[in-house]
Every structure is written in structure tokens, then in C-alpha cells.
Length: 258
Image (cartoon, rainbow, N blue to C red):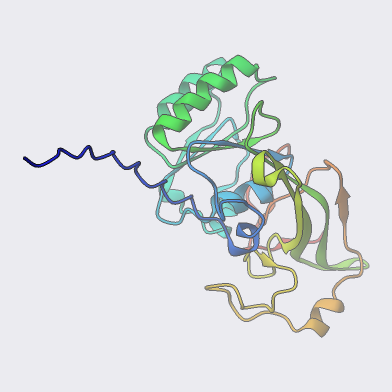
């Protein structure tokens, strides 16, 4: 008589993380955004959009961000046709997020007011069930990762002339587990073609990037650069900041200097 063998059920493999640009992937423990978690992005619209932009074939939602420019999002590679907008959810924003989590892969959120830990825990359970990633503009209790721009500078301006052509930023990642020690990297956020790439990378090295400036041309464009540090608001690629008036500037990745 054959001896029965009990087969242990094998755990399902963890789903692949939501992709992010290569310049940011090396800073994240999972190489991308782990599904079902909340990530805090401190006061920088460009970094918020850059994190979301790797989800090329998925759906997005933006909740409580009425000033988010569609041209800015498109400049980072986010398809406006796959972006759901809830500009003013009011006090019902938690219900809106819970409903959208089952329909999209990435939600960009600015909560109205301070988020209580109990509310964050309830929404965290919703995220884990749906596999949705929540990118929060500001603080979030229990966020798995916290990203911020420690310093940044725009290139392209001279004394009284020029165009904002690109932005270099020092990005810091902190969090739990493998991210507890924190990592920093200097990236273009974005470069003159609207591409997010490592600052040490040659222009055009990123996938799909257009040919870029030579190092000599870049070094000749540094006069008059603006710099922000430690929590100061940094605008996104096409003239949108988290606390600025809505409206898109003309041109992909460029602003006219006035």
C-alpha cells in the first residue's frame, strides 16, 4: 500500500513591482514600487510625477491635486488618457481612494489635513488587497518609503535671458527594512528632453531619450541656476508645483524665463 504524501501548498510568487525610471529604481529596495504600499513624497511635484511615470501601460488617478497640469504629466510620460482626476474630493477623500484602489495601479494623493494613523491603517489594508500603490504628496503614517529632494538646481538661465532647460536634484530615499539606512542619488528631474535619468549618465543613455547636450554645453548653462533645499517646493517639468496656480507652460520640459 502506497504511503500517502501530503503536499504543502506553494505560496504564490510576489507580483512584480510597479516600474519606475531606471535612475530611481536603483534607490528602491524592490527596484520599483512594491504593490499594495503607501509612499510619501515630500513637497516636490516633479518627483511625484517621476515615480508614477514608469507605469506606462497601467492606469493612474490623481486625488486632491487640482493644480496638476496634464501637460506636465504628459511630459513625464504619463498618458492623460489613462489618468483619472478627482480634483476636489473634500472630506470624502478616503472613500474616493478606497474606491479607486480597485480600478487603477497608482494613485497620486494629497490628503486634506493630517492623516490619523487609524485611517492610514484602514486604507493600507485596502491597498494590500488591491495591489494599488499610493503616492502621497506629504506625510503618511506608516509609509513604507519616504522620498524627498534635498537640493536642486535648474539649468538654462543666464543673467536676464534663457530658458529653463533641465533640473538636477539630489533625491533621498528613507524607509523601513532594507531602506532604513537611506540612499541618495543625483538625477536629472528631468533633463532638457523631459527624461528622468542619472546625472552621471550621458544624455540619450536612458531608453527612448533624445540626443542631448554635450558636457561643455551643459556647463555653459549653469549661470543663474536656482536652488532649493530641505523641503522647499520644487516645480515639475512643465511648470507645475504642488502649491502653485494651475496651468501648463508652453513646451515639453521647458519654461520661458521672464
